[in-house]
View 1 (cartoon, rainbow, N blue to C red):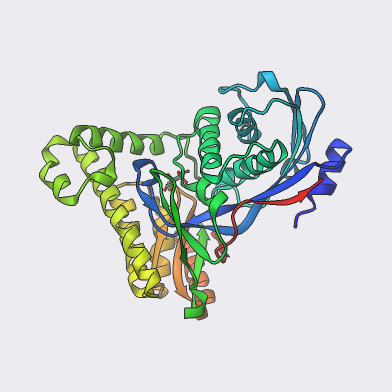
View 2: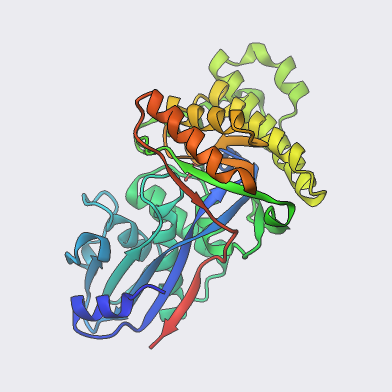
Length: 378
Ligand code: GLA
């Protein structure tokens, strides 16, 4: 466990009342459909962010981060309002705002989820703070409510129009399983995800290409989906069949049509992936990953040269399947590979990146891990 206690004492001179941790995530399949009432199949990675918090007797909020040399940001509780300028501290402040905290706090953050890699470091940060505050103030929120509150913090306070997947899995994940999440009502089911016993490995490739959901591309995709469902008179992409989409093509712009085609096909792929996992049919799972990537690259247009290179190079090194994960425009890809081929795959991806003069990628593997937890009280 991270030495967050000591860091807290160094910054604030006292011990924390509570320490919570929440993980980043990888999404196995079900990309860009959480905000369309779809189904997703993410799992939590082992890397997590820690939040240590102590109540203060006044209304001052002080926040420090071990990754920012403990620089302390101070703000009065009453001044915490959406639209405030700032950096990373807007995420914990957004959670404090969304949860309606009425008392001052000292907060220390120690984040170990790679930043900007499409592995949801922001959800890990929000969920670690929310889990700690929920316990510290005995708010009694269930995990679904915490997911909605942390999403609200990111949407309305930070101003990032993300869906509900990242926060949900960071809060609800179980080790050894992927989370089949219904993004409409946040009901879920755990699907055992054990590739190791079949001699496989899920390689995570951080392309180190820039990733940001605030550049407008993400919001535009959401808008195309919203305008498509309005024109087609359905509640969400989930109520849309291929048949209806194809017969109503003339009602949509070309862009709306292909964005909707991604959403409808991706929802179907999630259900097929669950069946493939349950049957331990990893060849089928691999081809679903490939199809998902093709759809994100061609119909949804959220991939980028580095992500396509990571996927193509993994497949030419023998991967069963590979795809970009997360919001796209950079960030990470995953590749389902034979465990015995890990080193060769890494070398092949590295060499291909070098030939194309891309920044050197980083590689991780992670077993499906536990969601947010209280690590220590008092
Ligand atoms: C980001 C968002 C999620 C989801 C993914 C794409 O990670 O935060 O809500 O929309 O992109 O699947």
